[in-house]
Image (cartoon, rainbow, N blue to C red; front, top):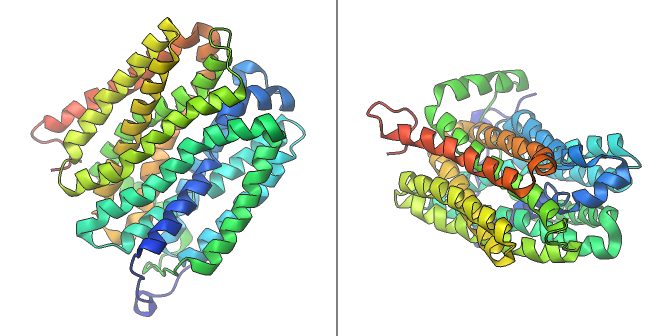
Amino acid sequence: MTSSSPAAAAPQPTITPAITFLLAFSCGAIAANLYYAQPLIALIGPDVGLSPHVASLVVTLTQIGYGFGLVLLVPLGDIIENKRLITIAVAVTAVALVLTAFAPSALPFLAAALFIGFSSSVIQMLVPMAASMTDQASRGRTVGNVMSGLMVGILLARPIAGFLSDYIGWRGVFGVSAAAMILLCALLMRFLPRRRPDGGQSYGALLASLYTIWRTTPLLRRRGIYQFFLFADFSLFWTAVPLELHGADFNYSQSQIALFALAGAAGALSAPIAGRLADRGYTRAGTGAAIVLTITAFALAGLAGHLLSIALMVVAAILLDFFIQANTVFGQRALYMLAPEIRNRLNGLYIATFFIGGALGSAVASPLHEWGGWPAIVAAGIAFPAVGLLYFLTEFRPNAKGRVA
């Protein structure tokens, strides 16, 4: 499978405010599919036959599918015309959402969830597409603006799912999302610019190059490992907090949990701010601050659970989302300054690395909460970024590899 030769490649389109908005909106709408299930675990699990201690598989399988898509699907953006690839992937997502809405038992539900994650990885073709249409001086700002749309989708998915489920059930949530993907597919077919990459590799050679890129790009490894630990915290918190709020201590309804989840949407504001800071050379300082303040956020969440204070829990959620999303942008901006011909592969490997962390965080959430309650969640939530902080401190060694100057 190959694309046109470099000589035949068409001129690349230039970013405009309208295209930026379309890319940001698309990222948010697609990313939301990965998170609708998080606040609905308590409803989905019993309905499809999943016991409480494995209910978080509902989220984990979607994230695992997303990871597979990042490695197997996203690299195709370096060799195949992007518009065609993106619209096909969105159509596949719509089909998978329909199957999820009608799944009669756990196995077909989890299989459909895996495919939702796989095809939704198309998001990570849209972000490099924006970067490729932007000049170097404003690349961080553009990536931040597009990522803010992605973050809005991630952070609003939970409250939207919670509110809708009270009226149309959890299956209706996935049905509405399927309709939204059909509409988005039509919009992308009409307005998304065509982008023809210069690469002429076969698909096999493309996949084989992933290991070489990972091995020879210290910056990719370093940024991926930082975000691995932070995104583990993100998934741990947002998978466990609905279980905690639904429990005896808080006894919240789905709509009340949805209102709580709205607090996390403030984290979307961090993406454009982080992009501008990165453009000004503050990536390393911003990374250190993001890791330390993520630890602080989970400590606040622990105090909130002890005092049964929803106000403190809201503050913790805002801080957690804000700094984890900011660090995502710091990493992407740094990687997008590297070789443009491998930008999709760099982005796919970066996101895949930290989504493995996300899958780990969501996988341990249910068993940890069953075993030790909220204190066990908090202990894990502090431990993940603490390991990331120890690795960050190695940046200050004289011969450290992969650091941002």
